[in-house]
Image (cartoon, rainbow, N blue to C red; front, top):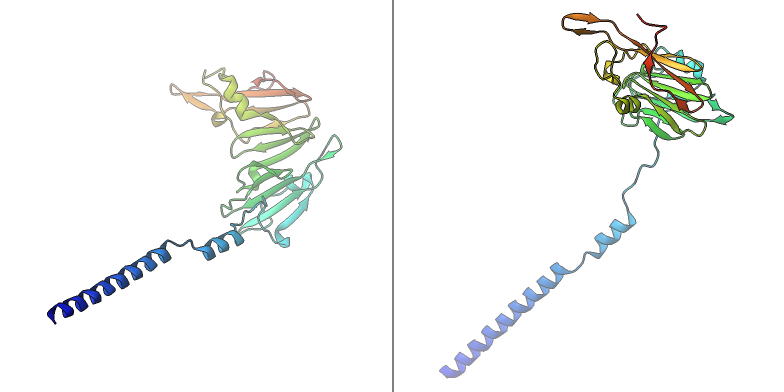
Length: 236
């Protein structure tokens, strides 16, 4: 009898072990199974990509202006966020250019100046810092914030960049012998004509002596721009 009881107990133990192993196997398979529903949802709902370079701006803060009207602005027409200014009359050699200024006084990431939908100035938080003009069939943009002059042809191609030009030239100031960069140019001193533009350097103190600013001129014909040189006819 004792032998039979031992055999019966052994059978029960083996059955219990089999049940435990079966449960463990099923649990492992379920945990390692691919989450089909999650993958399906991921494919059906791909992340959205914002391809519109312009922010959403209300009609009340969107303005169509001529170039003269824009340059006569004394401040933004809308405050507290974005406002948009479409310059409607820029035409270079019978080719209209789409120029848009997006202003923001709240550090909006999409503020800037756009030419034919391409962002050419990264940030506009003061309309007074952006000057626009057409001279000798070229579009000129004065960026006072970065102290730079950009020029574009009728195909909206950049044909001149003052900052890059100065960096390449290593032009030395004739009075201080220092390299001229946009950092030592007076941003309010630019003057544009149909064949040239000019600017003044900042006054400096060298060896306890005040050094007078120097006027430089850049002449151009067509798409050819000459290097900046001292303007001997207009020195202080």
